[in-house]
Every structure is written in C-alpha cells, then in structure tokens.
Image (cartoon, rainbow, N blue to C red):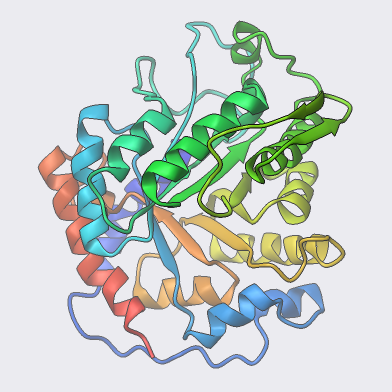
Length: 350
C-alpha cells in the first residue's frame, strides 16, 4: 500500500508550484445532469453518484496513517478530527518475513514499497485507542487482510471497536498477496478469494445478532450467537483491481478502495463497478468509491474526481507541505493546513 503515497510525494513540488488554495476561491458547482461515470457505462447515474452531484460534487477525505509510528496515531487522529476529515485509515500486516518470494502486485519490480521493520500496529487496538480521543471521526482499515483470519475473531474485533466508538467503523478488506504470511498463519493461500466472499456473508450474519447458523463451502456451523453486535451496520469496503475483486466489491461490498490511480482510471473502474452492481441484491444502496489520486492536487482536481464518481479521497496530507520524512509536528500541521485549504472549501461549496 505504500505505493499509494509515493506518487503524491513525487508530485509535491509541482503541486506546491500550482499552489493548494489558501483562502476563498471560485467554486462553481458541478452541473452535469448525468455523471461521466454513467455516460461511460452507458446507463443513468446510479443513486450514489447522483447524491454526490446533488451536493455540489463534494468529496470526503480520508487521512491515511499507514506506516506512521504507533506513538503518533492518537495525536494525528485528533488533528484529523479537528480538521474536518471524514475518517482516518490504518493498514494491516501480521508479520513481515525477511525473505518474500511473492511478487508485490502494485510495484513494477514486484518488491514491497516499505522497508523491513515498518510498524504494523494491530488495527483494532489502534482504532479503539483513537476512538477514545476523537468525537466524530470514522475509522477505516485500508486494507485488512480478511482471509488471514477466522471470521469469528474478525466479527468480535470489529463489533467491539464499533461498540466502543459509537459505530464509527468501516471494515476495508483485501484478499492479501503475500503467500508467506498466509503460510505462517496457517491459512491456505489458494482459494482465499472464494473464502473471502463467504467470510463477508458470515460477518454480516454474525453481526445481525441472535442465534444464527451457516452452512457453506468454507464455513459450516450450527446455531450460535456472536457478541457484542455493532450498534449499527458496519460498511464493508473491498480493495483490489482484479475482475474477481471488482465483482466482490460491487456485489458484496458497500464500497471499493483503490490503489494509486489517475482520475480517468478511477472513472473507468467506477463505470465497471456500476455495471457489476446493477444486478446485485445490494443495488440501490449507497456505495463508496475511495481513491488515492495521483493527478488531483487542487480544488478543481477534487471536483473533477467527484464528477468521475469518487466519494472519498485517501491522502497523506503532510506530503504536500513537509514531505515523506515529516516530523509529528509537521504531520499535524499538514493535516490542519489541508483541512483549511481543501476540506473546508469543498465542504462549503454550494
């Protein structure tokens, strides 16, 4: 996932040259009766795109805290809460073997884009701690390697975090890519996608409360009760770029999380998601398109992203102001400035 942010760091100089807006700016509302996404799909705008356009093309912002030292998380979460971010995101790996033979799918050379000894705090412990020091901020896993785990343990961890936070949790999931990590945790690497599909169904079943049973291909159990249950529905966002991953997101998820893309690429992917979702039992429900963008650095750029179907932009805002080696103080300041320069003006757009 680190590749999401290297593009932003590389573009920092050019973005600074154009200048992130520093005050009131002309903010014409989007006026397209049908979204670019829907035109690309050859269909009417879906309800979640129509809602985005109706509110003037506003996007929400997710501050990624991936790779930040655990000791920084609480202060950065407080800063994001105060700056108007919709959510913060944390990433996930359980172990990092010294020798990794599995190619990383999001880099040209197949090498992971983070060094050994990168901090990977447990997402649910981190979310519980951050929830205690924030008011309205939501928390997203981007992404949690779902098939590494038992669905019963995942259901309990997520539901507990949701209960402690007042329902401010979104479960972002991925199928995983590192064969070695699956072997170390005793989970089969092959078939992880099919298993993940079933896990999503099982999680929703367990969170419904009461006596539930399930008899599937990967999981088979008679009546049982899982507790606690979340105070409300937990949205599930699905990551991945393969056709099975897009189908999983569209037909089982409440949203899709991207790697680093251009706005045009996300527009095309969003059109595919809309087409896949059209015949899904979840069609008509709100659906998030969560993008890390390598060509949106201005208010107009973010408006164009909303027009393309993006509902949430994931970013490390301090990259624009202080670079990748920012201190904790510089990260806090970058979050505050991005809130003033970008989040607030777009939230206030007519």
